[in-house]
Amino acid sequence: MGTVISQTADRDTHHLHHEWTREESVSEKIVDAIAEYEDEDTDTLPPLENSINPAALDTVFGSTSDDACKAGCITFSYYGYTVLVQSMGQIIIKKR
Image (cartoon, rainbow, N blue to C red; front, side, top):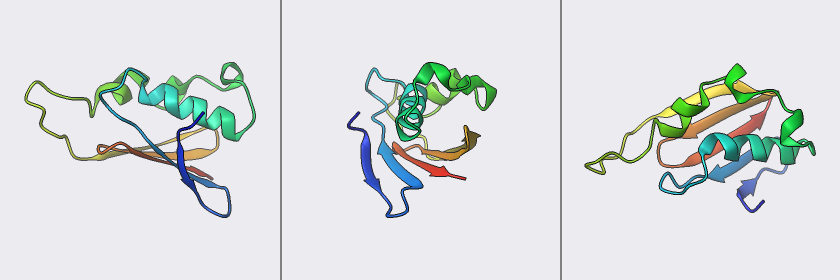
């Protein structure tokens, strides 16, 4: 998949990076990554919207017309993982 930047020795914490200007949505990236970590097909995972609104997640830190950076982070739980998405594009996925 090529999105993992680093992984801790315990293999329970995964670091990804998301470019908000790219076409791939952050919600798809998260589901794809967790499916890969669990060696499962994305279709077998529960819908992400059971944990968070994917459309809101995909757009909350996106570019604005004045290209001002929106600072912040969002944390939610999904499929036995705690997911932290930061405005600068860092994503931390930790197995609970």
